[in-house]
Length: 514
Image (cartoon, rainbow, N blue to C red; front, top):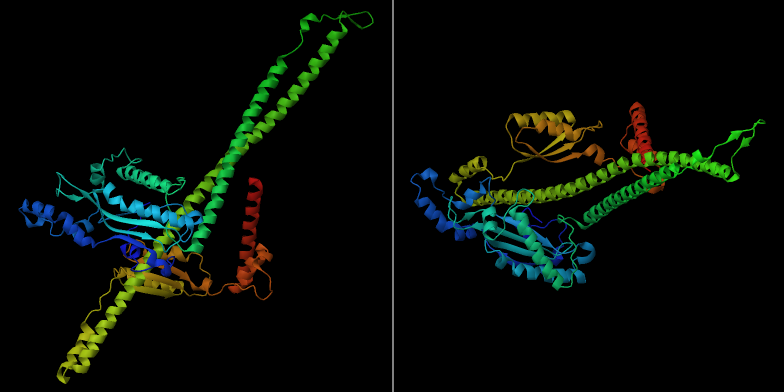
């Protein structure tokens, strides 16, 4: 799978919550080179030749690293992540995990040889998370180019030079290359006694409890999808069988005795003349068969109609299950991205704090050792010397009115601060997130976290009765939540009534689905 490319995370300059630091010594580093030095090594000669052809200074490229960093077409580097198995069969510390690690090592050692146009500068095998996995960071190098630098950064051209052709959006050069790498890893894994079953893309790294919960949710959704597919197949099979029965009964209906052969005559007394006993029996049997066939046809038509009505409903449930699965995957990815962002923020805050401490210590030293006549200069430096910040951070807290007022002030000043919004008002604000996002829309402000202290600080306690959550009804739980948040009177009655309507609608939907 494709990664975000966090070199500091890969090399454990900082560790996420899902990293076991006691096992970080087991990680294997294959490459660890400075990216800027690699750029100089790869492109300086081509850059000099390119600039020599340019007469105007503005057309020259002073620094190719910075040129690519600011480019919208190309990235400084790319990352690919490779893994064998999952937590259940290849967890770190298990026999399967050890075999997976050995296979990934062999794969890593042959990666550069297979990919001469993908210059690897960082490659690490992680053994301190849930499962062994390999991070490969590389620069795509295209040579003998007619446009721009003769040797330049281009993923598309680099992969083309390795023999991978794109066939449109569904089959790009990257996808073709990744399939080749997967095949190479599969061959190595099979040599290590693995039976490879392809399951598609990988999963982001997360804490073990979170991963287990996500895996359980995903498994439940997949079971729903499988059940829905099986139900549809069974219904289709029944429908086809019923159609065959209808055709058969219609054919039976047509099987009638030769009525022209029966020529009854009336006697003077009203009796039937000229009809044999066998003809009468045959006529009775035909009438019975016809009536039975008509009744069966009617029953089958009704049953077929019911089945036809069920099929769209089942297909809809299948679509809903698939959509839930897609949203679960997106949600997991977003959670991991937020986690990485928060770790980066924490690291940058630490750097900023250490810089402040260093500047303060230097000024204190000067204040103690400089002659008296120079000390006013130190005080002036304290006032004027700016403290570097990587990014302005600000917490906005208070009631809804106070929060919106502060956001408006920041927006009017063209601030680009990163924000943490904490609602501390007494009212129940169900649209907190929507109001905040509307307030910062179109500005340079970025909201990293929104907390509702009104909800977080008043979690209901069930200890007063000694009853477990499983022993309480849905209505009792909701009532205790209202009491814990001090929602009383008409507002509490309204919320209880609306909650009851929601429960009723959910139960009706469940019963109809059955």
